[in-house]
Structures are given as structure tokens and as C-alpha cells.
Image (cartoon, rainbow, N blue to C red; front, side, top):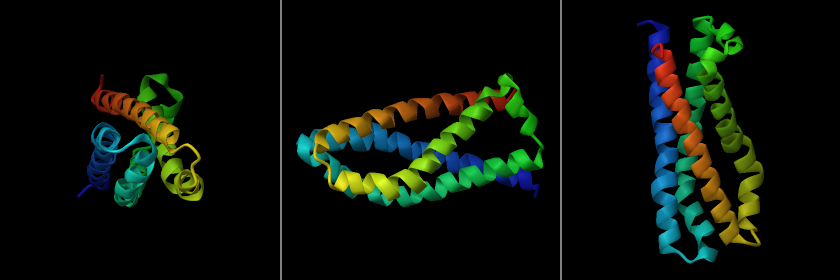
Length: 153
């Protein structure tokens, strides 16, 4: 089997589970936590649920990055980063970098500690919910652009 075909299959699966998970957390879990818990308890309730997803998200984000960079390397697509017609390539790398930084650096080293000692957990949950919505919107535009762009649009 051609390694680029395998890398593309892994890439699509990884993005599907990663962004699908972000969508589920943003559109189902967070509103459910908001509806079922008083404001002061939402952050703690969210962390009880989110902990199981974070480890999985790290794996899928890592696989998406590795497979994406492998395809760029093997197909010699570096020049696309100098052509604005391939804006979606920049968007994919940028989105991946944001999530990789959040999942591998910011969240484990800083954010969890801050959230556990939060002075205003209601405001922190609201901020986190807003950030999730923004990132999901950017991810949706990126996925649409990448699929359309990679098929010649």
C-alpha cells in the first residue's frame, strides 16, 4: 500500500475523531453541564467528564500532525505554504498548533492547576465555553476549506 494513501487515511480518521470530539464537548457536554449544575459547580463537573477525553484527544491530535507532516514531506508540498490559494494548508497547521499547544503544554502545565484553584469557577467555565465555540468554528471552516481545496476548489 502506498504510504501517502495510508497517511491520508490515518489523517482523516484522526481529524474526524479529534474535531468530532471537540464538537461533542462543545455542543453536547458543555451545554449539559451548564443545564445540570449551578454556576459555581460547572467547572468541576466539566473536569470530571473531560479528563477521559483529553488523553484520547492527545493521541488523535498527535496522529493528525504526524500524518499531515508526513504527507507534506513525501509529496513535497512545502511550496504550498508560499501560495495563498492554499490558505487551508496554513489553517490546518495553525489549528493543529493551537490544539497541540493546549493539549500538550498549556493544559497540563498551567491550566489544570489554575482551574483547580479558581477564584471564580463560573467565569472560568463561561470563558472556556466561549473558547471552545470559537475553536470549533475555526475548525469547521478549516475542515471545509481543506476538503474543498484538496479536491480542486
